[in-house]
Image (cartoon, rainbow, N blue to C red; front, top):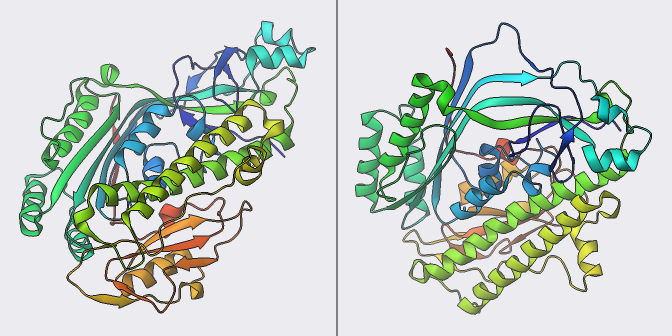
Length: 457
């Protein structure tokens, strides 16, 4: 198996030609000569602006550039992604609120080492693979992008599912989000639906004085996105910073470095991808339990259920997250000993997963009456499940089961088909983990407004 190049967030200590421990992302010694050059006849920059609805932590992580598939899971647990991941965690995505994101990605130029050659010192240690890896790792920084990243999230707490969908539909055509009309649109919607709005913001590069005075005013998020973008037009050099790099295996450099064990790396990478996917899904479930616990007046507890079940589920989900972190750490520290969470849990004297959504689930108070839960086992794709839930007036959550990457299949779903629940209730679909499938592509999200344009330097 050829070890592939991948992208990851910038980390202090990274520079072109610097060695990298591939599994942890930690910077090592200078292993390749820094002979980087820009792409010829490509001095312009690229701006990518997106406005879209997000429905899971996995989708937000993709916007933040810590996508599980693109980085083979390494950016999710290795060094250098903690700030972005912490922002995704604090945003607390869950199914009972509406989440809209505004992201601005500015790339002013990309430098790359076209013909990597080992440094003299690195070449001199080729006869000692252990020493070579201790000093230089097994990969190196081949390319670096300069620019900036801005991500803002607007959370809208509504009274019920119907209001969330009405607001989502109303914003579907809000392509001029940075105009006065859009600001008026937000004010109109907030007044008409008696919503509560909260905003959170994260950026790398741009002005250092961007701030939020009123966290309930979405106009501040729009203004800050505007100021961020404007700073790259007026002061591109002062506003930009390295914000992502490409990492390539050292074996492609001239000098014939000793290749790492590809089979061990492949297994460890599979473990990290699996752990990253499960962590994102479990975070969504934990966030939902916390939201129900913090907002009991918004939910009805069905007969046979209790708030103590919600609290217990939250504790179990947190235990699952802790175990996943330990499992990923093992894979990073020693790829030869990488284990999937279920096997790792057995060795730790516990089980995985512990967390499970309460049965019966608390249901969000709705004035729309009861609906019948359909048979989700008939769905052959996630998109089909989403459409069936939408047609039935239900929300959808997913839960991974098993440790084998496989095509989509509905293994189980809760509550059971044929039962009656309040409109807007959440149905959990159990499915095997999928590999190389971006769930964002399968989900019906708010139609994004995307703008790519060249800007001068």
